[in-house]
Image (cartoon, rainbow, N blue to C red; front, side, top):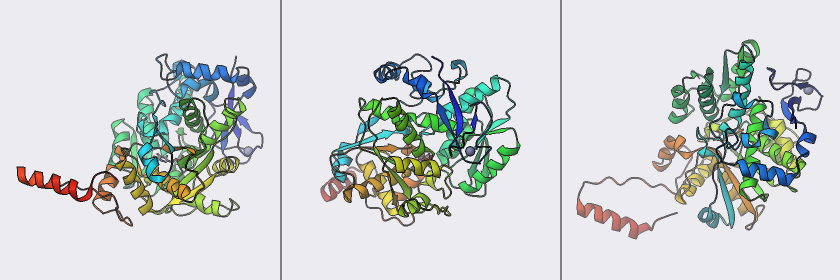
Length: 447
Ligand SMILES: *Cc1c(COP(=O)(O)O)cnc(C)c1O
Ligand SMILES: [Zn+2]
């Protein structure tokens, strides 16, 4: 069966382009594009058969189908020949029940999808494998592309750099100087990317890169490039697959540029079109209060949307005031009876620390999602027996600096309720014994 996919104008003006054309926005109306699939061709295979095929490939060895993304190749990007695929075995990250944290926040059925266990430590790998594979194919077909570039809050650049390094393609990354963690800065450097550290914020990097990519032979890898959304949408399929094809009641996801929430929604809608699922979850998108343009729009019933100047937040990956995918995200939230919640610096940092106390090790963005979840559960919108999945977007180890500052009480605007500092002692038996007995007796352990 010949599966087909193409770019199509998201505003519905009918413009279409092949996936190997260098185009990011509709040439007729300027709106974002989205990848559309020949759903009739996909529907030739019945849903039970798709489930069987996907389960048969999941985390197996037959390259590249063991990848969580390429295992769903027919509905992701059938246009790339297997030989051009650049895969680091994306997806297949753990979905686990966070029983102790759930107990503390009053949820019996709380699950965490740990996208931080991707190869480069964030969900960005899911989309980057698709984009870099397509570029790899375009280069193989003779396209003149100098390199692939992205503006990043730290994780997109790490993923782009790794996938380009795996393919032998030049990566160029634009980072806001001083606003990404040490781990995120060293990732593209280690992979040989041309790393431009610019004296501006993410929105400033984004504006520059759009101009560069419009004029030079540099391919744009930001999420306005809808190839990334195709890879990222597989998280929806994978969650349902890992729950033995049950659909959760709620999915909570942090949002910055809003590509990921758009991708999540697209994944569920296409599964429903194919008959794989028969209902949709509700979606809660969580924003940092210091970078909350979608939250403000939600408060107007999405009647209006105004970009904001993003203020500094520990949730650096979502410190975005003018999200590229806002219209896609609003459409998804309307379709999924969605809500938007926000979290202050104090709320997000304490949510992180509380989760860490229960054995998780979360990034600040997941802290935003968890703080939002706690508010929605306390308000009764999310019910105690609901099946809830929180998308944990990056690995906590990338964010050691902000965790250390939390425990030292040095995060601005944060009163650390779960601080736990190392006890410095001489190497002396009595001092050590007193410290152990004193600490354990005095405050008990755990959360
Ligand atoms: C990119 C990113 C986000 C936000 O995703 P958007 O698609 O920009 O909304 C959240 N958390 C982490 C860790 C990220 O890297
Ligand atoms: Zn258009």
